[in-house]
Picture 1 (cartoon, rainbow, N blue to C red):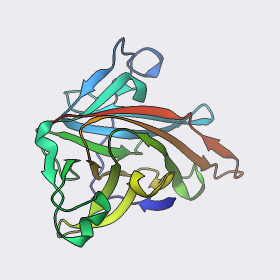
Picture 2: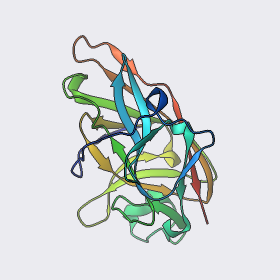
Picture 3: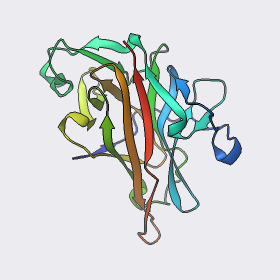
Picture 4: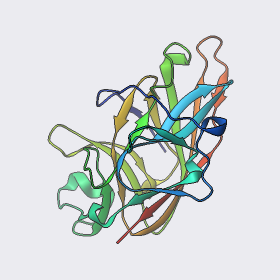
Length: 218
């Protein structure tokens, strides 16, 4: 079990939001998202509870989806091999394939982020939300990690290979990206839940457990 703080890594942009019925776009079938800027974990606090949504900013206007209403894809262009550098050993054996949605934007791939711009500062204790990755089911492992200034792994936020849950601490107002790595092609189901405490009285607040589907293509 890991509890890791995820601080602001890139400048946040204003969230305009294209809200449809019920506050989120309702998809009859899962909407495939495979390129562009998408905050996979988009956080908000409304009506006494935390909410997790997917914020798709790949088009001219932002669209907000429930996590269950999208399929997040790692296209074949995300495929690479695990370097021999021991710093990458958490991904597995050097030379083996791995599919990475990168921390630095590649316009041909999904740019997967964490967005907390909709959380007002001062509402939650320490302006902090714990985003827990509860389970990962799929043909391989999922690792979410950030790089240092030299482009090498700095902080492993989530690693399903050494046991879950792993918890990522996200600060209100922050907006950041990380590398999302998958060790085998196929479909992954990822369950996530957010929790915090109110600044006013310390009362606990939480989101429902949401389910993401990632499709990793050969």
